[in-house]
Length: 120
Image (cartoon, rainbow, N blue to C red; front, side):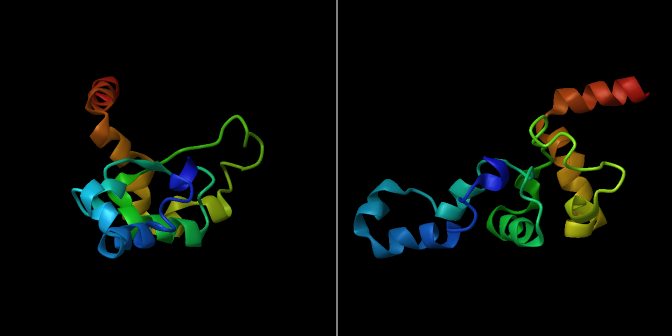
């Protein structure tokens, strides 16, 4: 689900559930935030400031990956003029670069190694 679907938005409520409902305490072995941070989230179609900031708050930028909705969004965005979809504008230069590619290279070391070899 792009941007984690609805998961980042009610994440704080899910985190409170084990404190409120005894049955949940038996099911949950770790804080809910740890479960939310155990998966990666793409930023395709989740590129408004509200969506991006909620994802950052819920899971951190190290769990966010660049994604597109290509072919469904083909022609919808102009790569030469990213405008409102620009990760640098939404996250800043360092965090935007992390989401745009650095995170993927970290979790896909064989791809990172191939890119180093091909570039070198």
